[in-house]
Image (cartoon, rainbow, N blue to C red; front, side):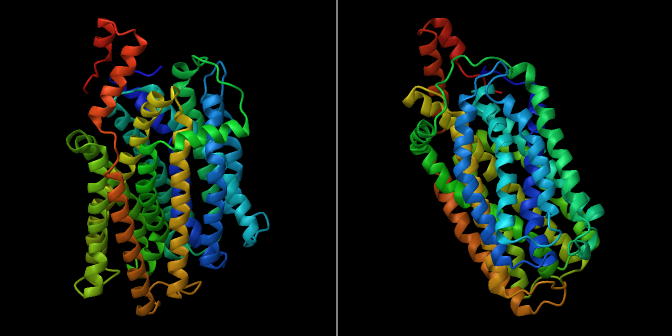
Length: 482
């Protein structure tokens, strides 16, 4: 069903809406989970980081199998829809358990591991089939970027809604983040939003994708699954993407998971600042939505990713450098917060450009692999992307846990009372990790070997082969520029 013409706005909106569930999960794991289990339930930050990393590594082994199963699903509703209808309900129940441990107290390390693994597997069963629809829907280089723009817009939109509700309703004020009572309603609301997002998007796309696949795949087997996964992951372009994407996603996971520590203890945000913070992040998403298309058209996806990684790193660290040098306004005041927000908007905007560029690159690998191996494997490659992202996010959260532990920030700390030496240690460790990860991401993503011309020539050649090389086939194969 892959098309090579501009897609209707309705389809972009409906497809993008399915990413709200990912935004809800990402906000919860990245912004609130560490501080909830560490500062509220009293678990050691290093232990929490290690457990969440282990959960992601376990889940990462499962993800490629889910992607392979999705590629092999053969029903009258197509390959992806059955997953999108079946997975959201168990995901919702697992999500609620994460924010309200069955014992009522801090779970054991194994208990947290089990809940976290269940949440991530169920979310993979939603996200991998959903994002695997992108290369099926369109082969156009720029339209794929557009679909990911909408996915990221809705993903961040869902995350922003949850952050606003957290800071204004469920976990109101700096002390609200440190009290247990608001986390259960936060989890329940997020669960409902996840179900509505995934099932609503599936229903909206049903008439487009609900059909028998063109070819019936062979039966699933674990051995064949891992053999195909190994073959897909040996694609050179995927390995280069994975090296750069791994660093970029680790940086994102670390930045998000440490943000509440930075906001509360370094910048001493008051209640108003915390309420405005989600809106500031969403402004950066809106700016990204405007600039990423022109960047891809002018520089291409690899160069855009490299520019975004370096630019985001420099802009994001300037406030911390000025603070350590003594040239920053007094923290906690209006001038400090407003100025910091300006840097956050620009830095986060470029950071998301990196994520969209990397995700969109994976779609081009699908045709390169099809040309070499004779079959499409959207699910395998996007589960591979998901594997890289999850491992990296877990590593980022793990790094945050180690930064907090090494800085000797005590549990139940209060904003404004943390020793300056502890604050300085957090800043130096966070800044050093940010620089290293940004340089690695820029180096590898900038070397991604498939550019626009390569992709369009490959798609045209494949289309000509399918049409027998006819003149009309050559006309049909010509890419349509938006």
